[in-house]
Length: 154
Image (cartoon, rainbow, N blue to C red; front, side):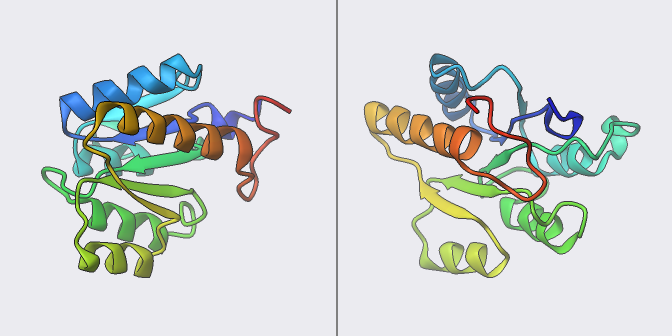
């Protein structure tokens, strides 16, 4: 496996409940083996850019996808997205917004900043599980991002 993809999914989610459901569903689909869960936007930026608590991390190790909540403590999801998509080192990493916000402004702002997909979290447990499963399968197994190695199923 290409060292650049030792992390397959970066989950940036402050809600313990939503994070647990997401990780549980990805684990059920065998997609959580290389998942990193971060709880706020500042920690996400430190991790991605190898600063602060993550100084020295090999920043060439990009996830196959970042699942990013919008409403995060410290630094909100739109600011994380702006930082990712404005930096040549990280602009091609696929980012999926997973949020409870159905505000048109959030959708427009996300796409203006370069988000790859915007998903409103279903409130129903079964629908939430199905949405996470489909997202994980698509972004980890089917999508082929620039510089990505063959998917684990190839």
